[in-house]
Image (cartoon, rainbow, N blue to C red):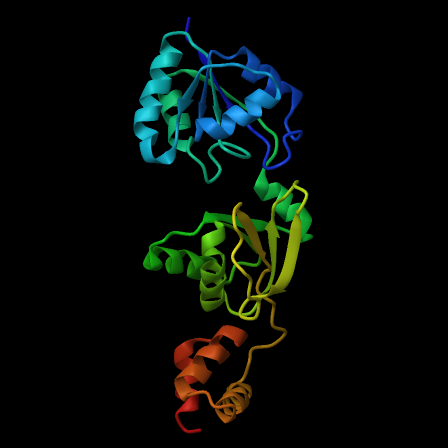
Length: 270
């Protein structure tokens, strides 16, 4: 008889944020596959659960998939967990799901805590949103993604590690311009906090640990197309403040959503 794979949500901070079904599954399965065995062990010890653990993380995802597939074919049941929240959501597991289905094996999900939905709730945004996960370290890929969603009429949600926070905020401003932003940290913990501000203005100190969720508001809808005269007036204002024509054009482009070329061409005769 073939085994079954369970994708199990784990707490994103507070260890009490785990479902009764998740605890039941973790107690019943033969093996638990986890990103960091030390991290998962803390959760299991808290609930007096003792199970064999195997390491399953993004750096060895392909080998991990094969190990789990073999266990399932041998009739063992396997729970896949991430360090926090739902597996496969900006965490390892998506490729495993595909391979399990291709092999005709059984897989199911045990939903629960998610940093994505928790942050969206805390931010108070309304309407649809687009989840971008962690931004790529590759500038070309990162900028291409942000430019592709720049004009979508919905909020954007980004995950960010603490040492990348200010860099990520700068990148978001460079690509999206001035927008209201909510930065959520340490959700469900004692020091949970929502920091509100504006891209291009907000500056934060580095946090010692934990991950952030950044929620960016949609682009504001203009009631009318901005005219050349309006652009020239803004350019004059910024040039008078000491900006070069090029920098003034870039600033107007970001703030008003017009092309850099259009703004720069209008600045030439100022």
